[in-house]
Image 1 (cartoon, rainbow, N blue to C red):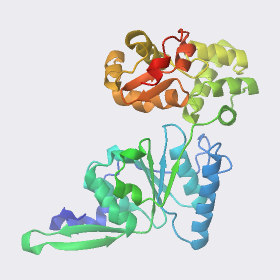
Image 2: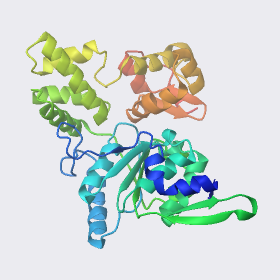
Image 3: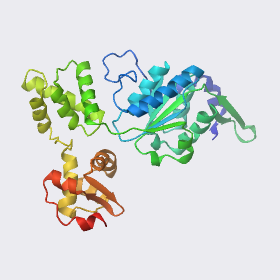
Image 4: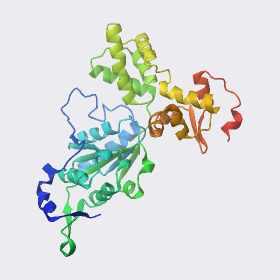
Length: 354
């Protein structure tokens, strides 16, 4: 795609690095010791198979002295896509610029970031499925040939220019891989899905985070927090902080199994990691719609929640845990969902095959 610019704009191209707005773009601070984000594959817990594959790709790129192929990470939120991009940057020994697709509204936004990149650097775009069409088309030649196609002048004086870019690696992250256009998805050389974490892996995450934050915690307490973290490291890290606050105010600051249970009960997070919104969703379907099926828009209106929030935040774990089912006619609560909420499982056999 060619970007049209007038002569004055083009004369200012040499200053584009300082003039362009780079929304939400930050340098990855590898010297920030207090962060809980791991800096190496060894300290990154979970996603074992994915890490092994990435290690090989990183080592191969370093031996060739070339940038890593463009990567696409997809999966539910909170599983460590941004963290993994930072680890890759550390292992490659390069800087990383982080932004999100909604921030790249104008052509100058994406152009400014691309032209500010140095050779081998990584550009991380979160929620890449939300890129607008213009920004996406600007990325095509940049990803494939490392060029920006631009035009300058008007009418008969129009000139087409190809501005070379340093070779870089684009890492895209999305919770909806299916929402990406085919041409954009096909330009990624490496595509991986991040999986939900097991309880044992999350317990390791909890203990690591507690150690970094100087929080004393027992193994039993770490396991209790892990089991209520919905298979998601981001939630586990958040719960460590909340339980730590409770232990500090109510007790001596040390987190034990009983203290963890007390704090999580007060937060209304049950043994499956469900919060009030999750339980309200399941109860709504059971009590008002006979267990379903019912459409997502109807559920959202009844709960007073945005349909997208339900799809992106609530549903992934409920589906993974087997508490909710998706059918062509809508959402249904599974027998396991009935049992978890204490409802009697009855007359479900027929509806399960509808």
